[in-house]
Length: 444
Image 1 (spheres, rainbow, N blue to C red):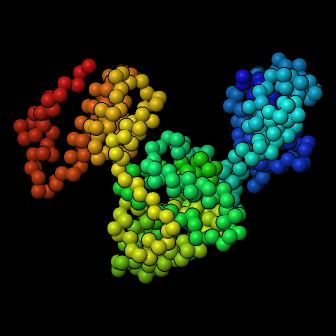
Image 2: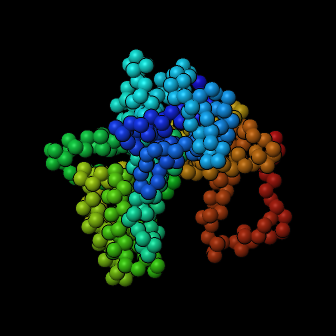
């Protein structure tokens, strides 16, 4: 069982053991510790433990207060440094109270104390399961700092880079079709067995195109995959290629792929891929066409097997892609609108932390035909906000049915022809100035 004092002692002990053992490297520090000690592209020994670093690494607001009553701790009031006055006593105290689960999550401690746990803890396994450095925000930032000087920072306008720790959604939070699950499983296996695939010369693998209407989860699946696989997520805003502020566009496209290769292993995600085909078919400026041709050439040259870059394109408009765009991808993954069973599953997942009386997702699924996953999330958001206006946190099935009806009304408004339609339709309450929204009693 964790406690503030146990958390702080674990932190101090990890820092002391890491400092003393030069066989250990950054991969042996849990990410929450690595982050506070990271400086100038690495972790320098000795690791200095202060009240500030302890608070940042453990989340314990007053770390010294948590451990000041222990006989083996000491603090320097001037520098704020906290450490052990008797390390042997600290280790005995810690080992009497710590669980094997804690050691399995901390390779440095597993290295030092695995023998104390009778095969329940293995250092190599702990290290293997620890999140790799390339997944840390601090590592990503230090690499980007190294790659770009101030004059080149505009190139970062083309990409948005997320560390896995910044992505909240996992694949378990999403409802996938059987085909989507199968393709994702294949990709995961390809990433696991990259060396073997290179050995047998199978390099044309790891370029996926996600195809489907807006709101069907293309971006969510790509991000969740990055979170689950501990890979940095590099999202390219293709429409930014046309930005007047981006100077030499072709050079910027090259730089985008250079970023992905330097951050590898990573996922390179390109949304609105139909933009490529549209640009090639239009009378766009020659510089933009050149940039798009550079983009297609760069896609040809990047490889999951050689560069550790998984490329995912996404489009809402597959009909606008030409043959040159299609042939860049080795797998096409369809993202249809969810059927009734999928909608019910999505509703179950999204409402996991909500309290709802008489909740019947199957009934709601039948009432939401044609809605996407993101539509369903909007429906639930409205239901929650409507309940909060009535000072309620507990929802009812009727709240959700009302929110579905409200969503459909808004959807109809969105699709109205504002020019040819009835001019009175845009006046609150219609032409007589009175509201007609009394057909449904919303009181509970």
